[in-house]
Image 1 (spheres, rainbow, N blue to C red):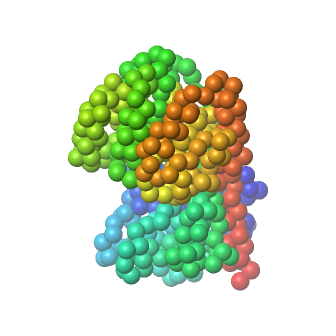
Image 2 (spheres, rainbow, N blue to C red):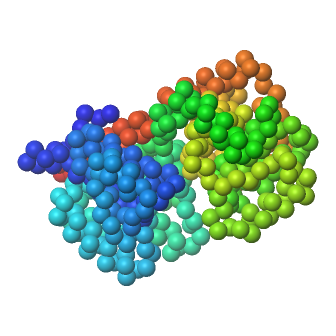
Image 3 (cartoon, rainbow, N blue to C red):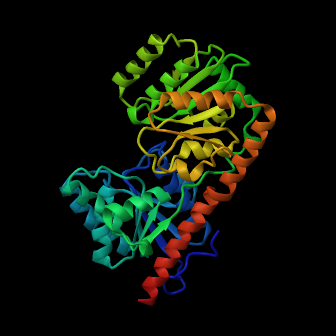
Length: 393
């Protein structure tokens, strides 16, 4: 971790960092990253504030030593967004905020103008490609390029930001999302947890388990996955689609119909959100990311590798940066069920020696490149860089 937050903000006071995010929901990587960075700020001697509309992870935030302030920054109503500028400016002044970090577009606009009003350094994180359909949409997205430094969660996103928005490399900083290596440690996932989950999901002993985690939405590639499993023509495997439909009940029914049409009722199971993903990964023999659109980073692929699981992902987006081909996993063409099926057959056929070698390489890959500690350290380095530049100005 960093030696502390630079820029002692005057009078011997360490820096106060304000992160702004729409809400602190229960499952998203953006929310989790916000909590993790807040904890890193406090551990480094700084003061961490988060403004959001609230949510389940507020408890995690306060437990990490940070402070939460509730504002309706999740709203896209222009009047609310405008009112939030004044509210945020008041918070910046009252709480002696030294740097504001925006993580989403609607609150980003309010935070940007509040930062300008108070002459406070402003940093953003670009978490995805966003829809760039027309001029207004592109302009709405552009607030995420207005930081003194723009953090991109992958090389793929950094290239997108340079190409689409013209942000110079001098303002871009690539910081991959990080995995909690304490939580995603194979030695810390007990056999009892794995057995309990296998029982809950009625998995048959001795059958290889193939898992595709991710919310039920078409671009996550569940239909491609089912088609690939059907092409294997095997009854001695168990395939899990793990993720909630988030109201997409028609799509869920479509998947269920597709499973029935291929006569895969005993082979493919759709289960809702899993609260113990480390155990879910550990009971899997291979983990799949079949996204038809590029993943900005691809957390599933990295978490699975952290636990030594073989991965098969689609050959675009963040997966190209996180999978070591033929060493920790394989990449296949997006939307190609036949190629995915062939990769699955290859993984299932691996002998114990090959699996052990792959597992060791996968764990080493994540430990070296994609740890939560590294993500936090690099983010604090960006804060330090911006604070120092402001002090020197």
